[in-house]
Image 1 (cartoon, rainbow, N blue to C red):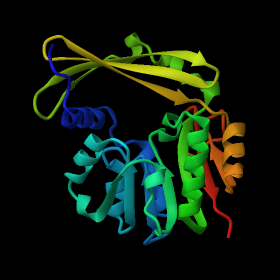
Image 2: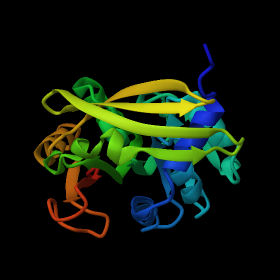
Image 3: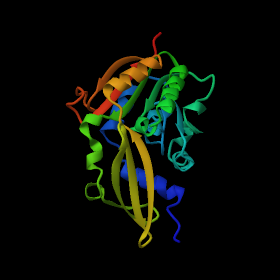
Length: 246
């Protein structure tokens, strides 16, 4: 049996599949609305946003449960400007207060268990200073993005930095209302195949507003696209911006 991709290769593949885009511009602009912010990047992955935010002279803590992603992040240029923490919201450093918290790249949907999602929002609320703000993105279920996650529409070929060629594609199904199971297929090493399956939550705008309110947040706005479009008229997004009251 051939070995699968190493953690370093998986991190490199993630970076190849997720280049800087308009969503990154949005979150960086959100943080940069004020200078010298204390920023929590929850679900920081391989550090794309954390490093960009730190480069703008903010103090950044990046948290992610994937050790391979954190190892890749900590090896990138500027990584010394970020505090990297392995884990979930339960690992937010105690006695550390943040002005801004972000959850990018639809990481909010990966927290599919409702209890865990509620705990995550409560943890972030506790970590924010009064008046502190949270922003995150989630796909609008009305846009039915999972219908485009098919092998035909998602097949791609990537060459990793070490020369490994990887073919990828995705498939999905809906095991229950509000949930989508997504499976990524990877073919490499002359035919070696591996899969990774995840469950994503598709919460409505009303659900997000209710969950944020239950955690103590005041919702400032929910957008439908990265240029500030209203819900239903953008790119099928639900971009939530909320504040911890003073």
